[in-house]
Image (cartoon, rainbow, N blue to C red):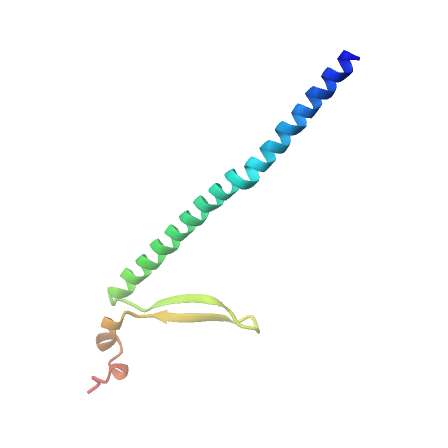
Length: 98
């Protein structure tokens, strides 16, 4: 009888440990990891935007950016040009055309 009680107690302790581990993972580990991933994604976005802005500010060429597809599946592209570049790159649009 004492042997059955001991086995039952060991099984219950194991179940408690498994459940406690599951709760700890759900509420502690996963949110911390997700927060780290989101932080790194944001750093990547910021870095990409900064680089694109720096390249556009050099006024060497317009930067085409694909922003997705329309309902028919055609790519939608916008062209990024720094405001300082308009007089030299597009005189007809800047109002300084002669």
